[in-house]
Image (cartoon, rainbow, N blue to C red; front, side, top):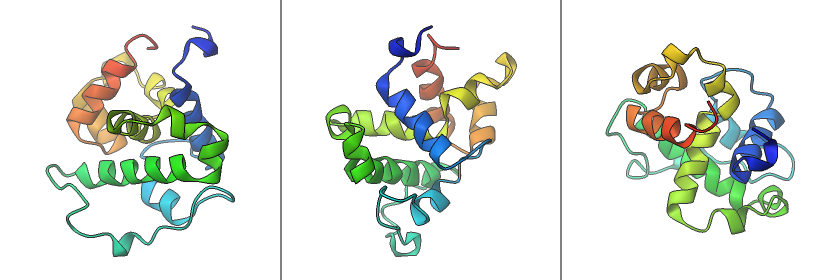
Length: 144
């Protein structure tokens, strides 16, 4: 597979992970929100988020809520504007997909053994709900 065949959001998500020098899961979403790199976004005070904002359906649901918040912050930041994210993230569904890319980066999913690339194992590995892991695996089916 050639890089140009990849969804542009995948390469942007990979760039974000590299910018934060993250080498292994779980991705520190909370820390990324609180300690942005220069020209990215304003620091987010996680303590000020309302309880209604964070989904608590599953143990890892709040992390997905924060990943979506991070995706929105990246999209509206100067950094996001220079990466054309406003055009790429026009619909809510695209923001959800970008959040999954951030919290389960393609390179880290590829690094898992084929036996570990199942929703239950990925849920524990990346600290995400199983449903999000299942969706991410279906998004990556052509790349793994």
